[in-house]
Image 1 (tube, helix red, strand yellow):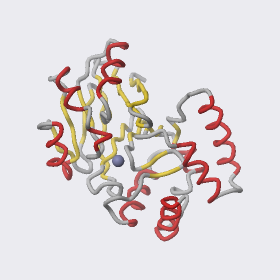
Image 2: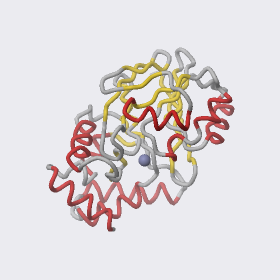
Image 3: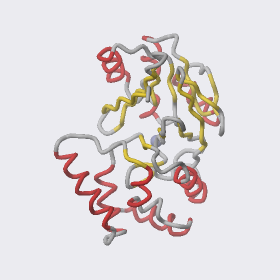
Length: 246
Ligand SMILES: [Zn+2]
């Protein structure tokens, strides 16, 4: 496998993510909460930024783009078509406006766009099928999912179902380190789930060491994430509302 993913913290609980293609040397940033940690990571690895892939328009995913582009003016910016105007107001003009099914090249790596409305109406995820990588932004978290700010519960449920249908060996990378708090709610919703209990033991140990809880396979999420396991939109909506109040 030539794909390498580097994960680091931005702001307080946002993930910074760099996807590097060893074959071509291309490197993509997946969302840019803050430019400084990206610049430090690129410098440390000796990588040159060639692409920026944005999942949605929230400030904690795009605010670092202008500074990163100033340092790497040749990097191509890829953004969701449905949020293009609002994102470009912050980032400047993009190279590509992406819709469901569109392809995105990072060197020799080939990603495809999955529209996942719900958290925001234009939210997209990036799936690199050959490498079994999924960059889900704020749609799917480990043991949780994003808040439904703009779409309907039906839209968010459909979006989660699309991601859940990807191959189980797919590794999930997402926008925030929220797993431990999500897991406490998950245990309250599904207390007898042995897989979930085991995952939370691992999560607590990782956090104690200051380590990240991502990536995780979709197989593991399907066994432990109550939002993916809801089974229907009514149960999902009920869970999401209870989590909002938790
Ligand atoms: Zn967001």
